[in-house]
Amino acid sequence: MLTKDLLRVSRAGGGYQPQFADRSHRPLAARVIGTYQGHVGEPRAALESALTDLERGTPGGSGDAADFKLVRGLSALLEREATFETDAAIEPDRARRAAFEAAEAVGVVTEDERTAALIRASESLAISADDLETALYADLEDRQVLTAVDPRWDPDGLIAQYNLSLAQTVLFDATELRVRSSDPKALISAIKRLRLMYEIRQTGREEPDGAAGSSDREVVVTGPTHLFRATRRYGTRFARLLRTVATSEQWSLTATIDDRGTDRTLSLSHEDPIRVPDADPVADVSFDSSVEADFAARFSNLDLEWDLVREPEPLATGTRVMIPDFAFEYAHGEFRLFFEIMGFWTPEYVAKKLSQLSGLEDVDMLVAVDESLGVGEDIAARDHRAIPYSGTVRVKDVVDVLREYERQFVAESAAALPDELRPDEAVITLETLAARHGVSADALADTSVPEHDRVGRTLIRPAVLDALAEEIEPGMELADAKTILGEAGIDDSSAVLSRLGYRVEWDGLAGGTLVERE
Image (cartoon, rainbow, N blue to C red; front, side):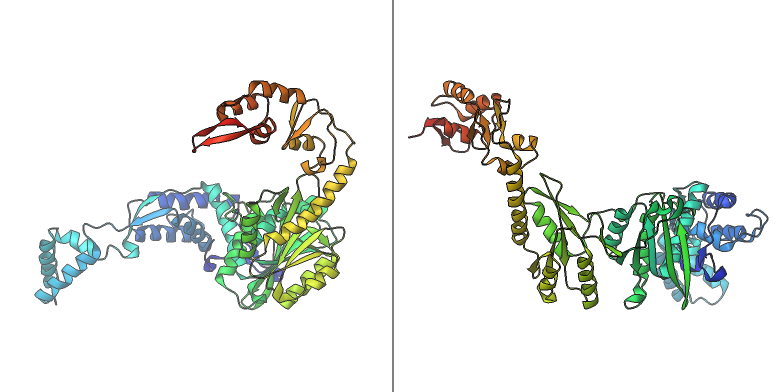
């Protein structure tokens, strides 16, 4: 991003359009890079003088008057790739201290007395008077030396970075963004991670010729002036959001810009020369609130038949769209239960959320509601499940709801199974057989498998059990017995050994031997 004093914008027709650099500026970009590279080992003052010449189109330039803001914008980007150091034989603070002490002793008034003081101070420091004089102010910015410059960009890359930075800087004064993208999920994820306020609207129209991904959904991001006051930090978030927007194949953005008290309209799209040369800085997974993060962490530690999905697909609700916080995906079907956590929101936002819930059709929704809101009954009246919480969402409350759905699915899938199952394998786990039929293992509870015995969670033909009974004997080491069972394809050793009439007599933590059960 650039500083606002380097903005190059056009206000023609009441708009607010960045004046992007293009291919014609490639020679200028190359000269700016060359100016930095050519001044390695020289003080900053010399570099600044050369850049000034370049701005004016004099000796360092091309002969034409260059736009000084463009030159300064390009050089501002290169400045971040440059290293400046203080080049002095002694630390400037130490040099000044010694010189001032000597001057006080000599009583400097004339030039000769100044020279005498410098000589006296240099002798105390064991350096030459010239080196001492150089060191006195070597740490001033214009006297620091350019020691290295390692730009990440060639001229074309520098122009691309400039255009992105220019567009980002324009957004510092945005009060509202309206975005359409061919990758709306990435857009919403970035908005949430940047903690920006937003809503999704269905415009009822599609862009012509596939522009902006032919989406009829528009994401409206509200700026700080709609809240309290504009802040630099909020403007920076808008700028960072542009990086995600511009990584989409097709996108369009319209912004309202507060131009010193006058509202102006900014329009950008994938047709503008805005490219993102490196990774999106807001790709890390995060949550809208600590309540969500805490719930996700605790739920993920459970071994359930449900997968937790963060930020699932948008749901249509009237003329707008909502994206629930989570969705629970059932492992044995295509069912999704959407999950929204309603925290401490303003009355207006609660009203909007209730309106969205009213507009949802054919959607199973579970809502955890902060008890202070007092809207649990309102949510239930909209045919959605509501569970109250205070401080944190109790995982047990959510799991109880999921179990209700599981019981329903198990009953339905069990009813669809044949009365008998006859797998070809001599040994097969209940989970494997259930997955083969697209049901949970619990759905097999009342299903007959006449050619197999159920031993724990494993189905085993009687002949296999008879063979194991012949091979396994009392006094055998547990490890040896497990090897025999493993060769037969059995992992659940405890249940099978119990079925064969054995228990384990443990010998500390080292292992154990088989003994007959009494």
